[in-house]
Length: 119
Length: 168
Image (cartoon, rainbow over all chains, first blue to last red; front, side, top):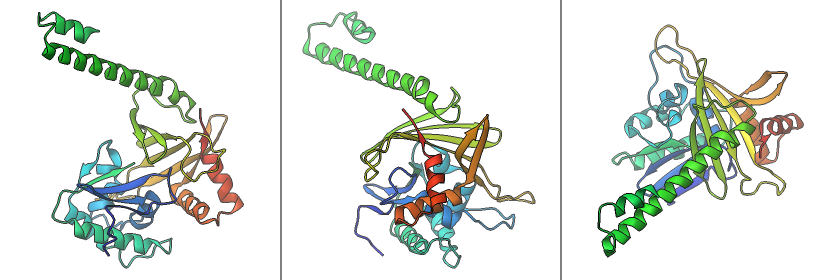
């Protein structure tokens, strides 16, 4: 789903003052309330084989979750990781839409430099 | 100013180039002074109003957000990553909303090996006699979402009020 927005705040609007997870590429960005990130990635598999992508960065508090400046991410790693959550149960009814928006945004920017940050 | 004095000592005063250089140096010095003053204020005054003591070694992130200001203090202690976040009134908030602090702590999870464990993430919602009360971030998030949707319970509202510490 291409929202057609350079700076997409759809899943942050109304949460001003709360932390936001931001992906940016050039002058395009998507902003997501961190509660949605927690709902998607906050209950990772615990089989001891390790985490990747956003699951790793969020749960090990690394990359954009432990930096002052935006971090260059491996888009394909983030994408592969996010896709794995498609069939998972989530607490909020709108979270699957957030996940799809995130996957689509990563897909659309798979060939360019993408930076992630938490503000 | 030290910078412009240094420019004159090179014996090039009077030329338009020097004047421009001196002006740039003066401007840079003024900017540096303003940054130093701001950091001093954040580290030595604003930080004092945080509900959880902020160590001098904390990293400071000073941000201009969309219609409000935010300052984050980050530090580590005892295996936890702490963040004390101060912000001014946000757009759409009640007129009487004042500047607030929200304090979080995280214990990073481990995804690899036999000692794999989930991350822990809490928000500070109370303290008395040196004892701190933390709630799980998921519980906090659910209350934030409920408040946004106008469905927050009395208990959730109280928790959010307690976790948004009034600041200077």
